[in-house]
Amino acid sequence: MKTIITLLLTFSLLSCAARPKPRHQNEKTAEFIETISKNIDSPPEPVGGIEAIQAALREPDEVSKGNKEGEVIVEATINSNGRVIATKIAQSSGYAGMDSEAMLAVARVSWKPARRKGAPVTATVRVPVMFATN
Image (tube, rainbow, N blue to C red; front, side, top):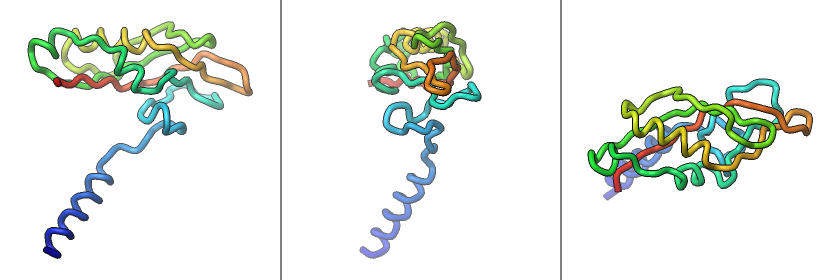
């Protein structure tokens, strides 16, 4: 019994250590959004966090028909009004439908703009978008 508990604790600690650390200072809304722009005081954030982007996804054929999963990293530029003005694929899922839908989902959500010295500014971020079968 003691061995089983030790193994479970070890596994638990290892799995926690293997999780990626947040790349963004504000852990509550945008855990894994990486800020590319420099010289800003606060990075842009999606209103509703990563969850809002995931909710804005529409399921492409690769996922619904092909039972495929994947992750896309979208590089998005958000202007001082909080609108996405440009997107591109920083890391492809390998499926065109997933890649294009990820860019659209990032553009569909509202964003709080980045700030420098209290004023809103244009900034670029990398956003992970996950596709999974149900």
